[in-house]
Length: 211
Image (cartoon, rainbow, N blue to C red):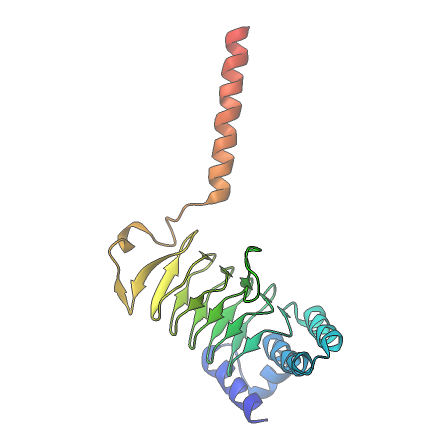
């Protein structure tokens, strides 16, 4: 109950829409997902992996949040909204972290054993971010919305972009920070569309010349 109480207090502190602990306990899917995960992780550690996976899938069905029972989750985790979050089997999340909806803590398919990231304490991972691979995101780091993180992020850093680059370290801009921000990062989908448009235009010119 101590852990539940501190989790509810953490939600109150971080979510201005939260009006009471009772409301948070009854209506916040992030709290439910965390509670289900504790039960699933208990079964997982005791080698009851089918039951563990059953509990985690039940949680996914009710909350829209998928946490593998093997993942290690720290204290006072706050999951804001939560829909679409995926946390892999060997992922580790430290204490006092804040994770928004659409986040993936996943693997790249290239690694064996430890395949998923280790997230330090007091880390914020914004909406839609993808953290992929068996590296560490240091304490106090901030991952921007829709960033794709493929390598280690130092403590106190802010990372943005695709692939993510560190633009601030302990609140100070790094050398190339002026070149990268959330409003000017490359959009890979738009780049692919522009490439297709150029190819179509080239084909049209070729056909026109033949006529």
